[in-house]
Amino acid sequence: MNSSPSIPSAEQATALSSYTLWQLVRYMLRLGTLGFGGPVALVGYMYRDLVEQRHWISDADYKEGMALAQLMPGPLAAQLAIYLGYVHFRLWGATLVGLAFVLPSFVMVVALGAAYKAYGGISWMQAVFYGVGASVIGIIALSAYKLTTKSVGKDRLLGAIYLVSAGVTIATQSEVIWIFLGAGLLVWAVRGPLKRTGGQLHSMAWVAPIAGALSLENLDWHKLGQIAAYFTYAGAFVFGSGLAIVPFLYGGVVREYAWLTDRQFVDAVAVAMITPGPVVITTGFIGFLTSGFWGAVVAAAATFLPCYLLTVIPAPYFKKHGKHPGVVAFVDGVTAAAVGAIAGAVVVLGQRSIVDLPTAALFLATAAVLWRFKKLPEPVVVLAAALIGLAVYPLVAHA
Image 1 (cartoon, rainbow, N blue to C red):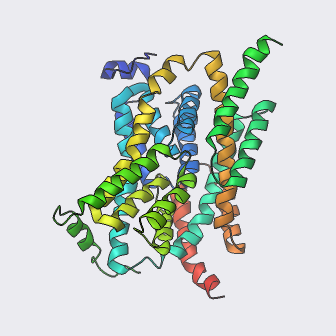
Image 2: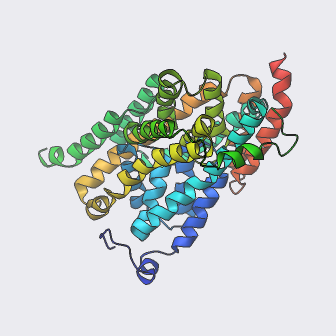
Image 3: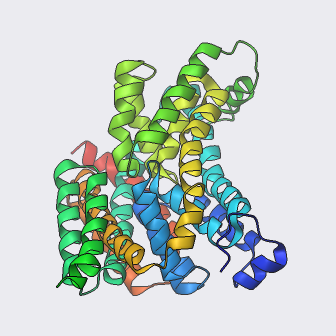
């Protein structure tokens, strides 16, 4: 495979892969539109669909992408998608795949932000998230199980790293970069040097905020500059998935700048959780509440641009040296730690979403149904859970 960072021709790309760039772009558009569950579930979907079922991406390329996404700051799922676009189609593929993955959820959060402003809040969101949150944990748990069996298996060293990483994630409720680096170095040492030495919507009133926000008149350029600077910093220096960036965002947008109230911030996180695509797209919702449509554009672009650059710049070196035994050992260690962190995140998120018997039942039912009917689309299950939440939550809330 050509390791040069230059863009291959259409003929070269076809020779390198069993699929076209536009097939991958269409897949990422679909995943960005229908992929619920946040980063943990999304990276699981990519492995299942692109590695196991379609065979578009090799297991080694997927592991390299996971390792790079964990080692670099920024949103995990978006970085992995960008890297997978780079595998056969280089910069052009990385760019189009990244845009396709992020754009659907961005459009959704802007529309929800307009509805939020028009109706002074989204009262039905709690009921929907009550059901969806528990169901999504079931989806995430299955994805984590598959990644665990494939990436860790019966290897005792990788298993120990996996358990330590999961424990640290549960204890700290965040993903620790030093665990990933240390795990990679440990496996490299053991397999290398050490081995060698021995409100409800009743009308279209929500359209007005979008139409008004599209205007460039009366923009607060100073605030837009603050938004650009802050979210660029968040995208460039916060490691881990949406689980890690949420408390960081709270400290900035609520405490430091006071752009949102506590309630608005909680609603922004809820919007990110009930919409498909990357959880970090909540920055678009926050930007919209702060400065309208252009605030959403600036916040989302500032968040994702660093992760794009921090993926495509080192990608050629990962492709060139990724098959070296030392690099393979390092990647195996990082992958084991990453999957352990994902499993730990399942526990952390489960503690917040499974709060009573109905949510526990939804969690178990989701896992059981998807285990039994492997071809059943997850969005169908999520929609059913949302309807159950709308029906059950008012009864539980007033009990």
